[in-house]
Figure (spheres, rainbow, N blue to C red):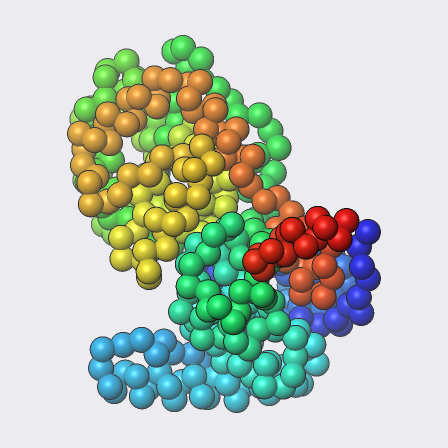
Length: 387
């Protein structure tokens, strides 16, 4: 039975400008609004807000700078920006009457969360990745709860482990809806659709490796295949020339603004392994070959990918060993075995935490209904004994 709490009247969300932080923040905002709770967003100059879908959410932009940097001058400038952002965030929180602050990681969240903690507001952090990010590590001692997306998260200080709860990573409604429909298993001779996306950082390595791998596929597969590929940089024409040369239908663009629709139609993806990407693959129930971004902080994308691989929902190919021949071999095996794709699609969907937005909203509201698993050592056994 859900324990009721005094719901906050207004919640401040602190998130950086990248999709990995903004997508879960937007999903939480939508859930909180549905509960009659006002929401404000505090971000940096990169943050575009939630757009016309959530006009009720007012956006406030503050200075923020990463403390990590090689030069002393850059560190001093970043510290000054963080200090200015702190005072501006403090003013916004006070004037707007926020009662809870939720930080989604990234240095743009630091000034707001620190200001909220200093003002005595309830603080909840959300970590999307399998490794606690540097900003969240800095802020963890100030948090009341830390919501995580994976069963195993590294980088948690011993003194903060009692704050952990598993909620999952909220995804866009349009993506979650995809998984409610059965995966369309391709029959013999049916068209095959491969979606190639690189995440917010792009993936120029895919420009070279994926077309070369596709060109090596057996002719019978190439005739059935259509490749939808995000091509960062100025390589659209060069990549398209390779696909035309091997007779493969293709749709290329530097950016797709209709990813949910393309995801719904895809039989297989090649992607990075950012937290939002992995969460959306699971929610949509789509199998993927994941190539973690090798320069990701603390190699967190490898941990993200491994979680889905262990659930049976995808395959991991480190970039260090990625070449046209190895990728061609993997694609040939997968595209020739629709039952394998269907099984991975089912496993991916089974691994999804579809109540993530609701569970995270419960934490924000101070409600513990048991959906957010308590990760403290022995806590589950204590609960079972109490029952």
